[in-house]
Amino acid sequence: MTSVFDASGNHVPVTVIEVAPNVVTQVKTVDHDGYSAVQLAAFDKREKSATRAEKGHFAKAGTSAKQLVSEFRDFGREGVQLGDVLQVSDIFAEGSSVDIVGTSIGKGFQGVVKRHGFGGVGGRTHGQHNRQRHPGSIGQASDPSRVFKGIRMAGRTGNARVTKKNAEIIRIIAESNLLLVEGPIPGPAGRMVEIHNR
Image (cartoon, rainbow, N blue to C red; front, side, top):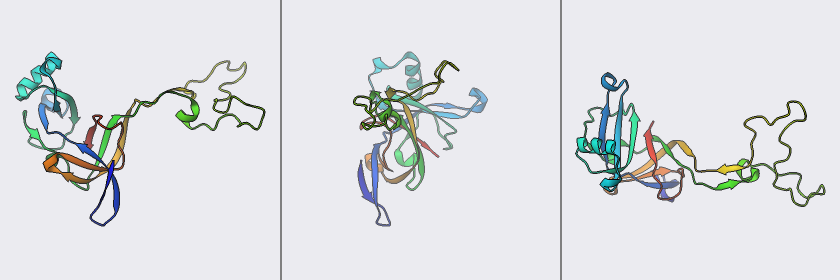
C-alpha cells in the first residue's frame, strides 16, 4: 500500500493494482448460451501449461496463452468483439466504485482467540494457569447430547475467497496500466484479484 492526495487535498491510503491488458477470449449471448457474459484473459503463460479447451479459446481470439481467465456476467460495455484488447482506462473510471475479489492471506490452524476474537477462559484470576486462550464449554449435557453445527471453534484461518465491496478508484495511471484503489484489498502483495464494476 501507499498513499496519495486527492483533488481536495485529503491524504488517502491506496493499494496499487496492475491491470494488464485484457483480451476478450469469448463473448456469450442470451440467444446462444442462455445468458450474457464476456470472458477476459490476462497475463501471459507458457503454451504447454494451457488446457486443450483454453488453447481453442486463445486460438479463436488470436492471442497467446494466458494465466488468468475469468468470466464477467452482464459486462455492460457494448460492442465488445472476440479478440479485442481492453486497457485499464477502457474499463474503469476515476471516482467510480468497484468490487475486488481475491484470496485472503492464509494464517494456518488457529485457536478461537485469533480466529473468532474470543476473550479466553477467565484469565488467571480463578485458579487457571494454562487455559487462558481456550474456548470453554461447547455443548449441553445429556439433552441434546451433541454439539450443534456451526459452533465457533479452532480451525484453518484465512486462505478463503473474500470480496471487498465499494472500493473507490482514486486514480488511473493509464500509461503504466495501474489502478489506485482506496484502502486495502484481499490477499498478499503480488496475488491476482478480480475487479468488478458496480
